[in-house]
Amino acid sequence: MKKIDKKELLRKLIYAKKTCDKCGSIYGHDTTTNFFHNFTWDKCDICGQTKNVAPATEFACFITGIRKLKEELKNETV
Ligand SMILES: [Zn+2]
Image (cartoon, rainbow, N blue to C red):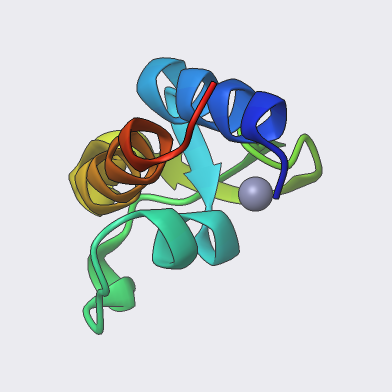
């Protein structure tokens, strides 16, 4: 992934209010407790597709993905 794409993704992760299960499991914490997610039919703030989405808070607000991306950006040269 290019640095510019990572920055864009990071911005999305920080401001996302809702996410589909797929993006949530990729960038959020790994969850096996999907059954209590509060899904609604709406647009995912990460991939932009309309599908079942849950509040970003259900995936720990992507703390895992944000931390990983920030670390990667820090280690890259400008
Ligand atoms: Zn998505």
